[in-house]
Image (cartoon, rainbow, N blue to C red; front, side):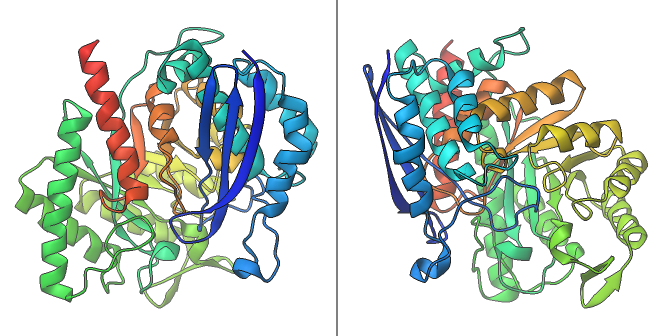
Length: 410
């Protein structure tokens, strides 16, 4: 039960940019992991190490791969793969920086994901079962539970070309009795939406996460389209939004629909949209350091207010958000913090402080479905996925369909 070898290589993510894949060999077998990458990233995220040379427009990850081979592997080979926290902390100490800028969060995370899979393999368990063991290591919090999807079906902001400043418009099924049922509801609504967009705008081009990117500018236009698609599908579905407001924040104002707006004007917009539409969750509604405006919206609406760029899965920022009552949910992204142990600690902190958790993909994804097992293992009940299109997104749906079937048999 020891790690025998670690081999990393450069592969491509769903946007055609380099990322890292790792193969780990243990006495029990071989496991793999691939690391995602974000486009709309918070400035407080752990550092994704890039080479910044002429190759691939400066996005190569050969330095990070070298760090895996030369700095990380020599310290992990011979260690017991079941000791996730110990091995993750070893890598964090090897890096020695607060944001993993020396070795790279992408390098550490790739190995950390492999350690999780190797631990599951050694124990003869499914990955989500092993993650549940890690999650409940200090006290019993929850059993494995299938999450419900938040599917990004209209893309804007940095995830798509066009005039729409707000980054994501999602649908989430109501009262779905299983992930299998929820998937059908999402898929059928997605295809109705495609027909409506094709009829009205002609093009059914999609963005980074498989959602459609129609030539619209306002959130009302996006939500009207979704409302019409839901009516045609006949399903009970609510809306969610990711404004990613830091991306259209300029010198103290928010610039969208060709005009400058204050934080108070943006707050009033959200309140109006929530009254007009069945919006149940709003993510990153304000600039990433504006804890106060987040708190105002949470107090004014009582809807789920999700911290992403605000919190970046970082315990220090998460604690501040909780203390200032800025959020009611954390968007958990494993590559924002760079290790599985720290991701699990963030989830534990949230649930211990009555804060919800939504595990999330990134815009630059791979076919690795690790987050499906993570969301199930910690029992958070929510997972943010792209549209049910493109293999980098459907890999997560398909893994959850498999887990759903397995849990039903138990």
